[in-house]
Image (tube, rainbow, N blue to C red; front, side, top):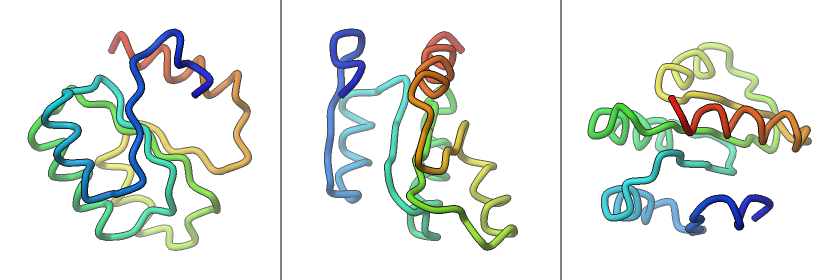
Length: 100
């Protein structure tokens, strides 16, 4: 919510709602705070196939230990950060994505 004055922000804790929200709102950036799973990777892959301009950013609570999974996931996400996150650096990165 740090950027609530600069961006329109919609939140959900239901990962099944991601499809509906992305289709109805058509955001520039999808910011997901979750430990990535294969199910989530498939959702990202589907969303990217429907909207190649959608930027997907993941905030991971912990490092992904499986290097193969991490590499496959990176094919569908534009940026991935492991917490704790440097909020200033992260903000600059997200703002630069907005204009991509």
